Image (tube, rainbow, N blue to C red; front, side):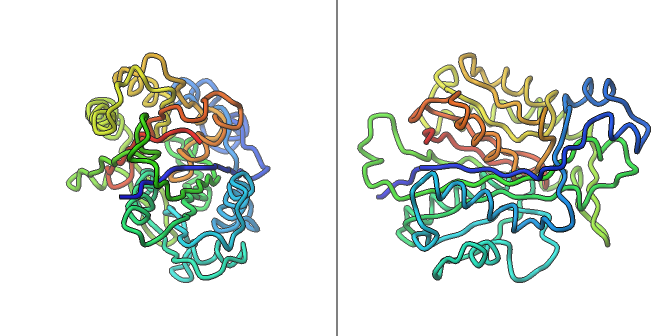
Length: 319
């Protein structure tokens, strides 16, 4: 069976930066309050002329250029997002139109903060089944559009952005000594706690039960993430990097520690970008690769979690 591999990455963030001091002028908060509780210093916020599909297209174009591929080479486009305002056309269809693609299959995947790792697994499965050979997998969210800018407990968390990965078939994967380019996914959810993270109403607004999410993430997720490593045949101490959903630095650091990835680079893009939902994992990974912090071919744990109290993770080989 043909495997698949991430061959290139790209990311995009709006130019406008919102600092903690900027937020302190809007709601009752402070740089010290935000930093001590979630570790975030800045976040990027898109304007009315930067819709989700435009951010996604920018990130995708960068990934395609890095891969040396033309838009017409892609036969599957998956966009993980929970902030698409319109029902149709999908964000994937709009990205395909913006990039001038031929006739790819297009679909959106809404699993909120774990959307990208769900979409990456879907692309891997599709390629393994022979239904596609080259895929664009994008995480893109415009959280500023759904933020309650009067709620200091949530508005300080959110940022906008997009990250993209080019995934191609890899016929040699089963015979490669270091394993497949994209390892087996482990995914699931806690349906009875799904209301702990919500995007509801008209207009839609983001809300969450912060303490419930924190307890779930820091206690229940580390053993699941270790099982992801087991499925990939990788010991946690052999991971070169860990890229968790960039929700909150006070979640990322203890979860990474409990996984046992003692030699890994830990992505901390949340400090500069805030919580960008489905964009957070591909954006953080793209930045690590761009800065040369992870070697090509090194094993990297990707692990998304959050909305629906869902999770999905896999170990990939760094492009």
